[in-house]
Image: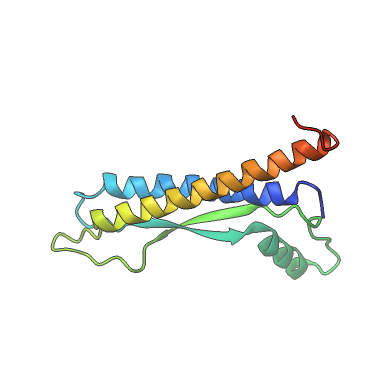
Length: 130
């Protein structure tokens, strides 16, 4: 386990919430587009998928090193969205709640990352205030 593994996981969380924000906001921009289905973002772990693919092609292949997991985000159609008369499934209130919730999660992860970096800075300064 690397010293910066927790910071890297937090960075991945920030990247996810930023990318999801962009997807959710684009749904609002399409609120008047007939037949539009809202999108969302799903997380997948690239590392696990890559190791499975490498092992499947040749059992002699070595997977990526531990701790080098790269998150991959898939844009998916929101399976819970219900279409209106014009076929558009964007519910402005629902999207606003998702955006707000996503923002709160982003802020929480940012605070955790900031705290983790402050702890590392304190440790790097041998416990003396920075």
